[in-house]
Amino acid sequence: MGIKRKETVTRQKASFEEKLKARQAFLAGKGVSALRVDRDPIVKNLKAEIKAIARRLARIDEIAKRTEEMARIKAEKAAAPKKVKEEGGKATKPKAAAAEGKAKKPKAEGAKGEAKAPKKKPEGPKAEPVAPAKPEE
Image (cartoon, rainbow, N blue to C red; front, top):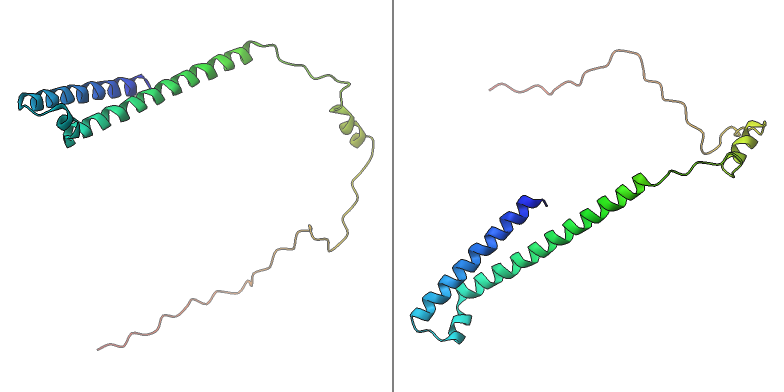
């Protein structure tokens, strides 16, 4: 979610807040009590929209912080010197043993892992399926 998304959501929140103020002013002008204003379904709906948008904005900020943190970590990893493999390490010993002449045991015939020979297809001409004759009326 980029900057454009945050701007859009902020504009939506401002719009809903303006509508809420206008609705509250309208109800106050009619002489409706504060308790009744809070129970008004339109006011409830507008407050719910504002609350949902506030959660969206918080999530957008959270994602932006995480993205910045990941970029910082990536930059640190790129700047850090790379580790060089040691030639006398454990990683080279198994390769040397294989090169010395230790060969794998040949598999016995009929072993489970052995691949089967592909089936041969008959070479004769294929007979095309014959459609049933339609009775003419």
